[in-house]
Amino acid sequence: MRTVYVNGEYLPENEAKISIFDRGFLMADGVYEVTSVLDGKLIDFDGHAKRLERSLDELDMPRPDALPDLLDVHRELVRLNGIEEGMIYLQITRGAPDDRDFAFPDPETTKPTVVLFTQNKPGLADNPTAKKGIKVISIADQRWARRDIKTVQLLYPSMGKMMAKAAGADDAWMVEDGAVTEGTSNNAYIVKGNTIITRNLGNEILHGITRAAVLRFAREAQMQVEERSFTIAEAQEADEAFITSASTFVMPVVDIDGASIGTGTPGPIAARLREIYLDESRKLAV
Ligand code: PDD
Image 1 (cartoon, helix red, strand yellow):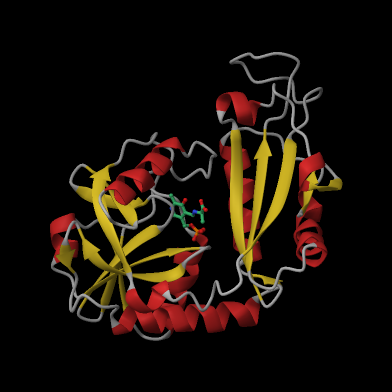
Image 2 (cartoon, helix red, strand yellow):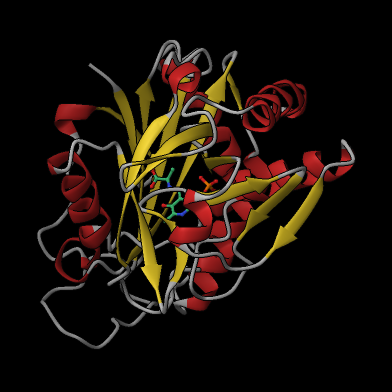
């Protein structure tokens, strides 16, 4: 039984309760972050905390009183649940007014709801899937136009994962106006020669915290990085492909819509980036 955090209290998971009027539940009026834990420490915590504040600001959502203590709350949950490797999920919603209403409630009387829980994943860093890579399919990107805000509106990405599963694949890359935006819960990359290519930042994709770190480490290691759009056809012709996220770190992609990428096995650049990312972010973990 996990200990979770709800609005200032640490509770057994089966005692934690949220109102049926919570706007996260009724309107998907909430934002979230997923931070990974390695060696019992938080990876890229500052990046996640900054993006969370940006998401709140973009949605004009009041900052919860608990915001300055979030690092302590993360650490306390890691400690209480004895997490060595895994994730911490955090969600903030606009809170629970007295009734359902499209208009935002008065922030003076309706305080944000803050929930955090741990996900224990022993072997997260040593994931055997990284040795064989994953298969992706392409699907249309039918999400809303502000994907840079990390909201809990995850129905279409969930449907995308199910479409991938039905097709015998592991995930889906979403395509808009002929170009890949991102994976259902990760950023997408291809490698041509020594150049790493990934979509430029904008409202069309989530500004991945893992993406920022991986691109920084890649540049520090003198690798070439191009931030631009690419098509599925270009990806299928690439030497390598991979994804990044807080829960998968760097994960090779070996098949796109049934076409093998490169040799059909994880490529050296993805493998190297995974190693660098894990090594360097472990050193910076808090
Ligand atoms: N997803 N793009 C999308 C649509 C995402 O949902 C995520 C993360 C990313 C990668 O961002 P980061 O590197 O900051 O994790 C990109 C998380 C892990 C999730 O929903 O579980």
